[in-house]
Length: 339
Image 1 (cartoon, rainbow, N blue to C red):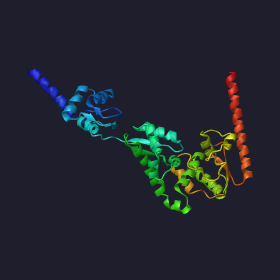
Image 2 (cartoon, rainbow, N blue to C red):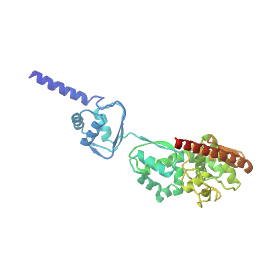
Image 3 (cartoon, one colour):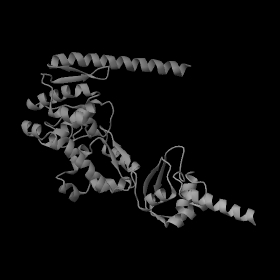
Image 4 (cartoon, one colour):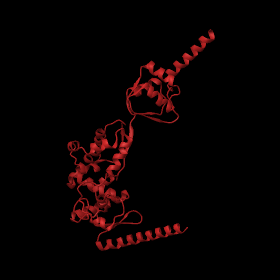
């Protein structure tokens, strides 16, 4: 009888010790839990056992009933440090989420950005796409549909996984306003250019420049052409018009599209991608020089020229280099096929 009582005592003491243990829920490596919807205790227990966060389904349910936690809120929860049953269960029951990081990269298409954002948050791409196309919502923020891509400001955003599409878009717009509109208000007034015009030019610079060091030089070149009422003749705008990022063909330059700056003077109607802050600063503070022309170089940058004659010579060198690369490629392919 004494042995039975002692066994019951030790079992009870062990369970109560576990109940208040600060390491009742623990893991060797960080575990991210995503509760898609409000979750009952039985379903949560299954998730936690499958995740190896708890070892005893019975003990977890016993602890949850003792503390009175039986319903848990949807959301993203990170488990990286050991927790007691009460601390862990109360966190989920109260919906005390851990934020997720959503990164928007520069120089992307609207479709790519929407897909990337939606893959990291609870809402789907259709829901976010509807928000950024909502004319009433855009009007409230003095935006037009064509300007949206330029406002999807590249940054890493710490947000809750369950945030709504509208709330997240408002967060992006707020970040843009703080980083650009407020920070460069004096310069915008000084050069007498609208935010939309600067972002549009910055988006072309973003697409054109392979490195930040060239951005102000490219900006100065575009400003020189604009001030002389020359056509920008920016290849990225033609890529945007034909809808592809690829090497352009002769016929591409003839595509009748309002964004084709080989056919239409001035800036295109809106941005062609989402520029980063370096590109926006370059548009605001162009390098002072007399360059009017540029052509790509084998190293991935550009060769700049002041006259068209000089530009033709540099362009010929670029074409010769390309032809040589094609020749080398064809030889390799023939050798591979012969083997």
